[in-house]
Image (cartoon, rainbow, N blue to C red; front, side, top):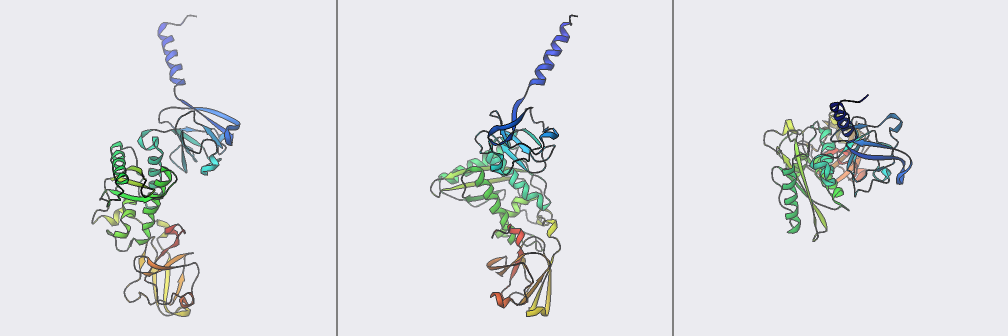
Amino acid sequence: MQLPPTSIIFLVALHIAGSAGEQVTLHEHADFRGEFTTITLSGNECFNLPENWHDRASSIDTKNNCVIAWSYSGCYSGSSERIAPGTRSHSNLGGVDFNDKIRSLKLCSGPAEASGARWVGVQAHNSRRQSHQSSSINGDNENLHQAAQRHAEYLASNNLLGRRSGNQNLADVEGSREEEAVRNAVTSWYKEERHYDYGNPGFQTDSQHYTSLVWKATSQVGIGVAWNPSKKLFVVVANYDPEGNISGQFEENVKPQPRFATFPVSFYEHHNYEGEELRMEVIGGCHNLPDGWENSATSVKLSYECIVLWNQRACKGNSLKIKDDIKNLGDLQFNDAIASFNLCTTINNSD
């Protein structure tokens, strides 16, 4: 039976629409070996792998495409990895700790995903922000990225590290490539949380990069990165919109990590937990001992696995990490020396 011309046109259009898209091949083993499956990705659509390919891929031939892979179905949840031409993860996902983890993926789209440094910057921000009850930030504002890039190039070419403005974070950092430098910059900004006093919310010079990073009302970020050959460091710039660190708005925009909300720590005037007692709740960042207790504690009991004691306010100076009750701080040369403290977890147990 001969089809009418309109039906033929419809079928041809359907075939073209069905075949549109970019192909990506997932391999069972590293170096594109073993069993494989080829899928077609289109636009900004998420593709969920069939169950027999859940947590199975060890390498991806992206066919010169840029893709984002997630460890959960549905994209946008779980851990993720950007895999694009020039990245080191194509042939061995184990090299980026993403072996046997993929359940969904999509093509890169938008200015942040198209650039590795931008994408890393957005992801690094969001991993920190989510821990502090702040919504995810996006990197879809090209003007914000370009402004950050121009500023980074200006600072690098003139061997400068300018003073941050209200809507900006800056850093000079090491890194083997741009992506690593951006990740290091975000980590350095976040480590300032140790100095932030949640009990006295407001602008604090030693934690201003941290508060900009997690500022709840901020919805967009632009990332710029440039190499400074004089210092042999990368200059990283993050521009925020709307800007943070607004006077009078810190309490509602800078939140502690919920799991740190109530862990009592007891300080005692004398050894063996004797004399007057001071109980303090741990809420994420740095805590200064109140007047009258600074440099007065001789023993400590804690209900959390690890805290850091400091001999100056704002978690500065000499420090002592403790993971158990201490009957006599004198045994550790820290008697009558505590001025502030914070949880080890707020600095990733790395300092």
